[in-house]
Length: 471
Ligand code: G6P
Image: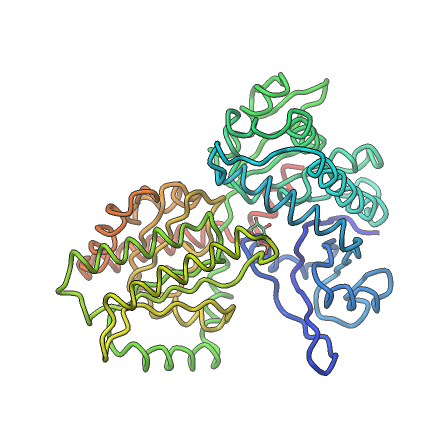
């Protein structure tokens, strides 16, 4: 039986089916997977995740008990859950990625907030079933008094469900996202808001990436459940859940090693060929509403308008890889990003200068190449749990100046050496891009070195061990 279990919606790998019908395994994307992948292969750790696609489902169905490692894949101990596709779709797309993600990232404008009617009730029922499937699998796999680490907004109900089945376990829940303040969180139907909070309070320990998100969660518990908040814990119905802040950084050595491999180097050569020796402003994101890509592009446009002396001397590499395209909001957002990029190209592009290269395909080695060449890294989310891009950039480029949104969790640690902006203020962001480009060379190197130290201070192993210690 396993002594440490990790549960998350997305696992470390996913599968696609090739034209010839073969299964192709790929590394999963996003902050959670980047953070946890390093620890996935440690001894005694079992990772439980959901099958997300048809490719995943084919892989699981061929694996004994859903154990991909036992089917010969190099994944670390991994069990994938084959949840019925319709249930999965409602839980993942409708509840987790629409409702809960939108609430915690403040993405709804209140007049257009969703209608919570009978359709939502059905979706919520699926979210319960999906959380229940995780609780059941964890209860089956966990050894006596094992420690279980449940991840993120997909699985807010699992801790309480698992506790009901297996009171011997030590359970942690970790939120990789921000948490909304009570007056915004309470746009959820009352019973849904309560169930989410009570679900997480089923854990012994609830972890957050920054003090700010931990505080917001505690405020929601106080205001919406009448729970008592004191001394780093939330007490509700006679039980106390400890609240912890565990920041997440990057394993600098393994990222650097990966970024020195030949595929990355050949992408670097190709990008240099394309951009000449021009200065590069780089951004790398999932195409995600909270990442604020359109305002980032508009800031670049304002910068070009204000600084004709930079025309022909700078290129913006905007890498926005596809995400959650089952949701119309994401498809529309991708189109908006593309429209905005085209307008900039039409307005400023010349025969021998492309001011902007928008890349909408997922290409990890190409992204690593862009990081390595970056003079400026733009990270301007509306709201973000942490944002590991802000930490990866300075590790891979020793002269990279960082323009960083004050609303990213990373700003709490990197704010001193980044140029910090209000993500809604396009004018301020445009001025920050200019300051980053003209930053004096000594200052640029000094700041990048200090950003790099902060980015590597809490690698994933420390993040994980601090939570296990807290249990
Ligand atoms: C964020 C979330 C993760 C999620 C990732 C990618 O980092 O906190 O839980 O895995 O985005 O999103 P996706 O929907 O593709 O898993």
